[in-house]
Length: 426
Ligand code: ARG
Image (cartoon, rainbow, N blue to C red; front, side, top):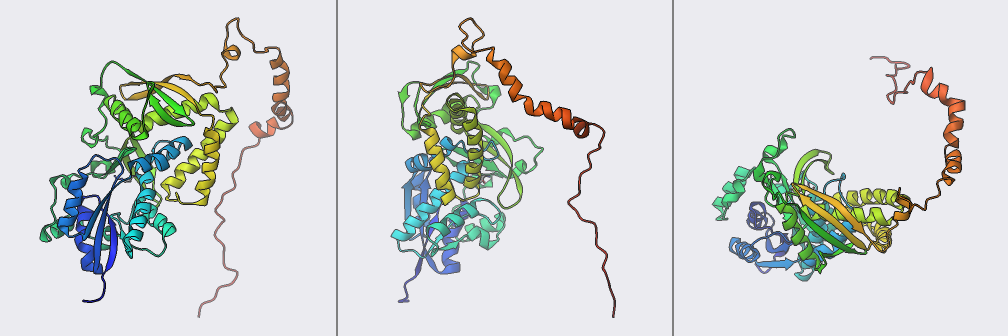
């Protein structure tokens, strides 16, 4: 009795899995549970969730408002980097994980806890992101992942909950698994597991079907300062307000629905639906601004950086030196990213219809076909001669071989089966 019980800090969402965990962890590990509910901008009754944790049996229940930190340290850096996983997914869920890991590690330190716990399953990306981040931040913390360990089916879990007086809300009967924060909403499971099935309308909560959106398009001007959105239609706003505003405006026009068959870190392909109006609008606008301000070579290189950056976020490597190195490039490249982009929201689309910047490389005098033209047409003749020289000579020397008579035979990567030099049986 006199021996002090160990403590575990559990990331608590208020849902079924982590509610069951509040009871299951003390039974299995004989530890006291402290819950942390982290506000990343999903609209929720945080105080209600805190009370529920205490009612189920948590020794202490903490709520942390991490919205501002989320925007400043995670969302905007990802936006400036142009981080879209496989070109489409703005990484809302993935960006939240390193922050949740950091908060768990911080609370564990304050509470002198020995372990942390989360509700991830054993086949998704999120367990990897949390565990890898936690191992970086504090390798001494034990990590408990009840859902990965207990192997209960959904029905068994509900039964366990009922037997232990854990309130089971009606909405858990929903066939979908969802996750949401300021930067977007992720939906999977149920009928969505059939990649041929069109997502039913009921999966969407933030965005209207284009059939039901206003006929009148809406125009927005987004002002950027060093790659960070600072105002909409000349009205300055903090990051949280900008993102909430764009989620509402975009959602109203059906902007930001994404249907992604994605490559998970754990080797499987999975189908996920996303709603991310603000992320869609801001990435579209930011890319358009870069298109006006960066040189062609810099833009090509930025694409590579964006892909690497998105991969490392998706793959759970936020807390890495490589990331810090990429930040150095992104920060440098964004010093000149000032200007305004005008977008039109209409019937599920967000289209760039205007751009301006004091640092623009676009020159109307060079681009125009009118008499104001200052481009030196005669210089093109010499340019073409030298520019095309390599392929001109190649055509003379090699074209017959390359495109003509020789058939292209590919070497196989599979060597033939080898016969044993000698084999004998006893
Ligand atoms: N596929 C997304 C990712 O790995 C979202 C994962 C969470 N999705 C969910 N519906 N619970 O980042």
